[in-house]
Length: 238
Image (cartoon, rainbow, N blue to C red; front, side):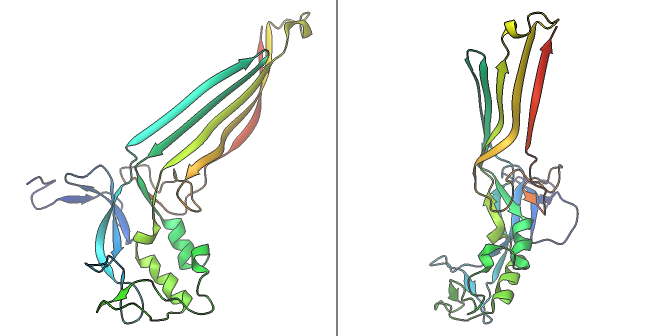
Protein backbone atom coordinates (compact mmCIF):
# COMPACT_ATOMS: atom_id res chain seq x y z
CA UNK A 1 0.00 0.00 0.00
CA UNK A 2 1.36 3.42 -0.97
CA UNK A 3 1.93 5.85 1.89
CA UNK A 4 3.39 9.32 2.37
CA UNK A 5 4.74 8.14 5.71
CA UNK A 6 3.97 5.00 7.72
CA UNK A 7 0.32 5.34 8.68
CA UNK A 8 -0.15 8.58 6.70
CA UNK A 9 -2.03 8.59 3.38
CA UNK A 10 -2.74 12.35 3.13
CA UNK A 11 -0.83 15.48 4.13
CA UNK A 12 -2.32 18.87 5.02
CA UNK A 13 -0.28 21.59 3.26
CA UNK A 14 -1.72 24.87 4.61
CA UNK A 15 -1.01 26.88 7.72
CA UNK A 16 -2.97 25.45 10.67
CA UNK A 17 -6.22 27.41 10.75
CA UNK A 18 -9.68 26.07 11.57
CA UNK A 19 -11.55 25.92 8.27
CA UNK A 20 -14.22 23.76 6.64
CA UNK A 21 -11.93 23.05 3.69
CA UNK A 22 -8.24 22.55 3.14
CA UNK A 23 -5.66 21.48 0.57
CA UNK A 24 -4.10 18.06 0.97
CA UNK A 25 -1.61 15.93 -0.91
CA UNK A 26 -3.31 12.55 -1.11
CA UNK A 27 -1.71 9.25 -2.06
CA UNK A 28 -2.62 8.18 -5.65
CA UNK A 29 -4.63 11.39 -6.24
CA UNK A 30 -3.70 14.42 -8.41
CA UNK A 31 -1.76 17.28 -6.84
CA UNK A 32 -3.52 19.65 -4.39
CA UNK A 33 -6.75 17.89 -3.47
CA UNK A 34 -9.54 20.04 -2.01
CA UNK A 35 -10.96 18.27 1.04
CA UNK A 36 -13.82 19.79 3.00
CA UNK A 37 -17.05 19.18 4.84
CA UNK A 38 -19.64 17.64 2.54
CA UNK A 39 -23.35 16.99 2.94
CA UNK A 40 -24.45 13.64 4.30
CA UNK A 41 -26.56 12.01 1.59
CA UNK A 42 -29.09 9.20 1.46
CA UNK A 43 -27.40 6.04 0.18
CA UNK A 44 -30.31 5.19 -2.13
CA UNK A 45 -31.41 8.52 -3.57
CA UNK A 46 -28.34 10.69 -3.11
CA UNK A 47 -30.44 13.44 -1.53
CA UNK A 48 -29.13 15.58 1.32
CA UNK A 49 -30.15 14.39 4.80
CA UNK A 50 -31.58 17.02 7.19
CA UNK A 51 -31.65 16.78 10.97
CA UNK A 52 -34.54 17.49 13.35
CA UNK A 53 -33.81 21.22 13.19
CA UNK A 54 -34.15 21.23 9.38
CA UNK A 55 -30.43 21.75 8.79
CA UNK A 56 -28.21 19.57 6.58
CA UNK A 57 -26.02 16.97 8.24
CA UNK A 58 -22.34 16.54 7.41
CA UNK A 59 -20.50 13.45 6.24
CA UNK A 60 -17.16 14.93 7.29
CA UNK A 61 -14.25 15.41 4.89
CA UNK A 62 -15.00 14.84 1.23
CA UNK A 63 -12.74 15.22 -1.80
CA UNK A 64 -13.86 17.77 -4.38
CA UNK A 65 -11.04 17.33 -6.88
CA UNK A 66 -7.74 19.04 -7.61
CA UNK A 67 -7.11 22.75 -7.18
CA UNK A 68 -4.66 22.63 -10.09
CA UNK A 69 -6.14 22.66 -13.60
CA UNK A 70 -4.63 19.82 -15.66
CA UNK A 71 -5.42 21.40 -19.03
CA UNK A 72 -4.40 24.79 -20.40
CA UNK A 73 -4.85 26.45 -23.78
CA UNK A 74 -3.76 29.58 -25.54
CA UNK A 75 -4.43 31.16 -28.92
CA UNK A 76 -2.64 34.22 -30.29
CA UNK A 77 -2.61 35.83 -33.71
CA UNK A 78 -1.87 39.09 -35.50
CA UNK A 79 -3.81 40.54 -38.40
CA UNK A 80 -2.52 43.29 -40.67
CA UNK A 81 -4.42 45.52 -43.09
CA UNK A 82 -2.56 48.41 -44.66
CA UNK A 83 -1.35 50.58 -41.72
CA UNK A 84 -3.54 48.82 -39.15
CA UNK A 85 -2.67 45.83 -36.99
CA UNK A 86 -4.66 43.77 -34.51
CA UNK A 87 -3.05 41.35 -32.06
CA UNK A 88 -4.91 39.24 -29.51
CA UNK A 89 -4.20 36.54 -26.93
CA UNK A 90 -6.89 34.19 -25.61
CA UNK A 91 -6.05 31.64 -22.91
CA UNK A 92 -7.84 29.33 -20.52
CA UNK A 93 -7.59 26.52 -17.98
CA UNK A 94 -9.83 23.50 -17.53
CA UNK A 95 -10.44 20.57 -15.19
CA UNK A 96 -9.64 22.18 -11.81
CA UNK A 97 -11.75 23.30 -8.85
CA UNK A 98 -11.69 26.10 -6.28
CA UNK A 99 -13.21 26.62 -2.83
CA UNK A 100 -14.48 30.20 -2.57
CA UNK A 101 -14.28 31.74 0.89
CA UNK A 102 -15.69 34.94 -0.61
CA UNK A 103 -18.94 33.21 -1.60
CA UNK A 104 -19.04 31.45 1.78
CA UNK A 105 -18.71 34.77 3.63
CA UNK A 106 -21.32 36.42 1.38
CA UNK A 107 -23.76 33.62 2.22
CA UNK A 108 -22.95 33.77 5.93
CA UNK A 109 -23.77 37.49 6.07
CA UNK A 110 -26.73 37.42 3.69
CA UNK A 111 -24.93 39.35 0.95
CA UNK A 112 -25.20 36.68 -1.76
CA UNK A 113 -28.22 36.47 -4.04
CA UNK A 114 -28.55 32.77 -3.15
CA UNK A 115 -29.82 33.92 0.27
CA UNK A 116 -32.84 35.76 -1.18
CA UNK A 117 -35.30 32.81 -1.33
CA UNK A 118 -37.17 32.25 1.94
CA UNK A 119 -36.40 35.55 3.66
CA UNK A 120 -40.07 36.13 4.40
CA UNK A 121 -41.42 32.58 4.56
CA UNK A 122 -38.43 30.59 5.82
CA UNK A 123 -36.44 27.90 4.04
CA UNK A 124 -37.26 24.22 3.58
CA UNK A 125 -34.10 22.41 2.55
CA UNK A 126 -34.47 20.11 -0.44
CA UNK A 127 -33.79 16.57 0.73
CA UNK A 128 -34.90 13.94 3.19
CA UNK A 129 -34.94 13.36 6.93
CA UNK A 130 -32.91 10.68 8.68
CA UNK A 131 -35.84 8.27 8.18
CA UNK A 132 -35.92 8.87 4.43
CA UNK A 133 -39.11 10.94 4.29
CA UNK A 134 -39.12 14.31 2.48
CA UNK A 135 -37.86 17.18 4.63
CA UNK A 136 -40.65 19.62 5.51
CA UNK A 137 -39.09 21.56 8.40
CA UNK A 138 -39.14 25.32 7.94
CA UNK A 139 -36.02 27.19 9.11
CA UNK A 140 -35.67 30.96 9.25
CA UNK A 141 -33.47 32.20 6.42
CA UNK A 142 -30.68 33.63 8.57
CA UNK A 143 -30.22 30.40 10.49
CA UNK A 144 -30.36 28.24 7.37
CA UNK A 145 -27.95 30.20 5.19
CA UNK A 146 -25.47 31.06 7.94
CA UNK A 147 -25.27 27.33 8.76
CA UNK A 148 -24.07 26.63 5.21
CA UNK A 149 -20.81 28.35 6.15
CA UNK A 150 -19.96 25.15 8.05
CA UNK A 151 -19.80 23.25 4.76
CA UNK A 152 -17.35 23.39 1.88
CA UNK A 153 -19.63 21.66 -0.63
CA UNK A 154 -21.88 24.62 -1.61
CA UNK A 155 -18.84 26.79 -2.30
CA UNK A 156 -16.64 24.55 -4.43
CA UNK A 157 -16.82 25.48 -8.10
CA UNK A 158 -15.21 24.52 -11.37
CA UNK A 159 -12.31 26.91 -11.95
CA UNK A 160 -12.56 26.59 -15.75
CA UNK A 161 -12.19 29.86 -17.61
CA UNK A 162 -11.48 31.42 -20.99
CA UNK A 163 -10.14 34.97 -21.05
CA UNK A 164 -9.21 37.54 -23.62
CA UNK A 165 -5.87 38.22 -22.01
CA UNK A 166 -4.69 41.02 -24.26
CA UNK A 167 -5.85 43.06 -27.24
CA UNK A 168 -3.64 45.48 -29.18
CA UNK A 169 -4.84 47.74 -31.98
CA UNK A 170 -2.01 49.63 -33.66
CA UNK A 171 -1.64 52.11 -36.50
CA UNK A 172 1.59 52.74 -38.39
CA UNK A 173 1.75 56.36 -39.50
CA UNK A 174 2.74 56.64 -43.17
CA UNK A 175 6.36 57.74 -43.71
CA UNK A 176 5.31 60.77 -45.76
CA UNK A 177 3.74 62.29 -42.66
CA UNK A 178 7.05 62.46 -40.77
CA UNK A 179 9.42 62.33 -43.77
CA UNK A 180 11.39 65.45 -42.75
CA UNK A 181 11.81 64.33 -39.14
CA UNK A 182 14.59 62.11 -37.69
CA UNK A 183 12.11 59.23 -37.22
CA UNK A 184 12.27 56.14 -39.42
CA UNK A 185 8.95 54.72 -38.21
CA UNK A 186 6.15 55.90 -35.97
CA UNK A 187 3.25 53.83 -34.64
CA UNK A 188 0.60 54.29 -32.02
CA UNK A 189 -1.33 51.51 -30.31
CA UNK A 190 -4.20 51.04 -27.89
CA UNK A 191 -3.35 48.22 -25.49
CA UNK A 192 -5.88 46.38 -23.28
CA UNK A 193 -4.86 43.81 -20.66
CA UNK A 194 -7.46 41.40 -19.25
CA UNK A 195 -10.31 43.21 -21.02
CA UNK A 196 -12.83 40.34 -21.07
CA UNK A 197 -13.57 37.11 -19.22
CA UNK A 198 -15.26 35.17 -21.99
CA UNK A 199 -16.33 32.23 -19.80
CA UNK A 200 -16.14 31.32 -16.12
CA UNK A 201 -18.09 29.16 -13.68
CA UNK A 202 -17.33 30.94 -10.40
CA UNK A 203 -19.91 33.44 -9.12
CA UNK A 204 -18.60 36.76 -7.77
CA UNK A 205 -14.90 35.82 -7.89
CA UNK A 206 -12.18 35.58 -10.51
CA UNK A 207 -11.43 31.85 -11.08
CA UNK A 208 -7.71 32.68 -10.90
CA UNK A 209 -8.03 34.10 -7.38
CA UNK A 210 -5.93 32.32 -4.79
CA UNK A 211 -5.39 32.43 -1.06
CA UNK A 212 -1.69 31.61 -1.16
CA UNK A 213 1.11 31.06 -3.67
CA UNK A 214 2.50 27.92 -2.01
CA UNK A 215 1.41 24.30 -2.54
CA UNK A 216 -2.07 25.00 -1.18
CA UNK A 217 -3.64 25.79 -4.55
CA UNK A 218 -7.40 25.60 -4.95
CA UNK A 219 -8.73 28.08 -2.40
CA UNK A 220 -9.48 31.77 -2.25
CA UNK A 221 -10.62 33.91 0.64
CA UNK A 222 -11.70 37.50 -0.02
CA UNK A 223 -9.28 37.66 -2.96
CA UNK A 224 -8.81 40.84 -4.97
CA UNK A 225 -10.18 40.82 -8.54
CA UNK A 226 -7.79 40.70 -11.49
CA UNK A 227 -6.44 44.04 -12.70
CA UNK A 228 -7.81 45.32 -16.00
CA UNK A 229 -5.80 48.01 -17.78
CA UNK A 230 -6.18 50.18 -20.88
CA UNK A 231 -3.32 52.24 -22.21
CA UNK A 232 -1.75 53.95 -25.21
CA UNK A 233 1.67 53.03 -26.58
CA UNK A 234 3.68 55.40 -28.83
CA UNK A 235 6.58 53.74 -30.64
CA UNK A 236 9.24 55.92 -32.27
CA UNK A 237 12.16 54.49 -34.30
CA UNK A 238 15.16 56.61 -35.22
